[in-house]
Length: 116
Image (spheres, one colour):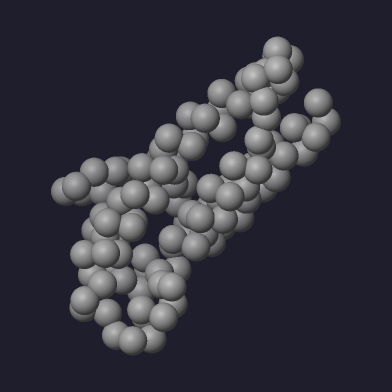
């Protein structure tokens, strides 16, 4: 059980680092086509924000538990909290990637190399 608590703590720590870096919580931002935060973000800011979001997603996916381990109440609760965040983070990442692809042909060569 302690390994899962450490993995959850790693995710919470990464969430705090991302909040410190970009000054907003990805789980609380507006999402959507018209007024989504990541959908309307400028290119330079988007290129700084997406790696932070990717690091947070990677920390979340490191939780990695099986169905047999979800019988413990603490592990199950942490998994449910992470699952809820995963859906929101995926939607934010999707908005950011769509925005990045829309702006791809307007970028200069230096920005494009940063993307890949």
